[in-house]
Image (cartoon, rainbow, N blue to C red):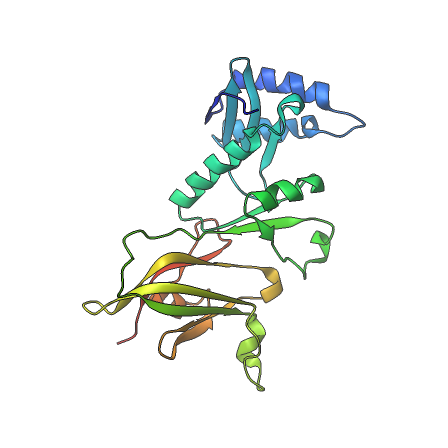
Length: 252
């Protein structure tokens, strides 16, 4: 069964209703009611959306898709698509802002399966000891560019390496990730227009990811954060969690 309702920006009159069911659902000192000051803060900052049905606000999400997000649905309505609807709405808004890499903290940890069902994977933050007990997941945008299609497309290979590849005298070794996508070569401005977006997460485990682009040989290799990568078309996400590539600007 799917609940009939709609998503909108939260307003102050939503808070008493939400507060009441959060209080009722708190148990053993646990529950999001203990983060009430954060929920109020999100509302004040315009960073809260709610799912409302005929009875009022039965689910909410704060701070879009981010490590600071709080997602909660009234317990008697869980499993009916409300949380999914809130997250899908937030993803659309993040995509519109070109936040191609999204990171969330899974708290409680039982939410890992939900986030996996929404297309999220492990965000490898190994290296920060104070985060070892926390679970983070990420989503990499793969937006399709519908205008890039036809029989004239050619395959591009994009590889992502850890930072150490630049200082490895014995060769590059295996890439951490490999992406294949089709692209159209524009002879007028020497660009390769990708059929779908390629996103690179700024995962601490990679210690400054290195990107390599292949098209009839190596076109580019370098750190994603450097200006040379921006020159070739790699763009930083506004939320600072990574980079994305839609168009490759070939060197003259």
